[in-house]
Every structure is written in structure tokens, then in C-alpha cells.
Amino acid sequence: MAMKETIFPISDMSFPFSDVVELNVGGQVYMTKYSTLTESTLHSMFSRNDVKDLPRDNRSRFFIDREGFLFRYVLDNLRDKQLTLPDHFPQKERLLREAKYFQLGDLV
Image (cartoon, rainbow, N blue to C red):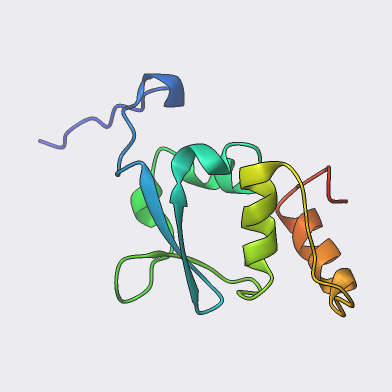
């Protein structure tokens, strides 16, 4: 006899992995707290009922197929709610694309 699947609302679920999340973004590895991700598209990605279906790399880190180098600025913005770029930062347009992808309204 097949078991019936029960789907619980996200608010009723216990978090399916530790509060520290390891991310592989375009080959760059980042570690952050789940609570840091709550105001971006990353939150919806990790709030799914089936996080086991999220892509992972060969070390079980969550894989995000985006620009790895620029993600440090995305993560800094999520942590501090501000963005500080180096002088003469040549990749502003690419960073803007990443901000749009991750739905960071304050950067767009």
C-alpha cells in the first residue's frame, strides 16, 4: 500500500537543515546564515517543501548557477542592507543584473 504524502505549510515546518547554509555560486563557495537570505529570491528557494530537490554540488553544497565573484556583493547587501564597492568598480552593470535576479530592490 502506498503511503499518502502530507504537505505541511512552510510556517509549520522545522527547517530541514542547519541554520548555516553552504552555497556554491558559480564555483565560489559562500557560507551564511539562513536568516540572512530572508529578503531575496534565495528565501523562496530555500523555503520550498522539497529542499532535497535543490541542485547540489559534489560536496552537498547548494548550487546556484550565477556569477560567483559578484555574489559576495549580493551577500554583503543582504547582511548589511548597504553596498560598498571598490573605487573604479568595472562590473556595475553585471552586478545590477545579479541584483535584479536576486530581487534586491534596494540595489536595483
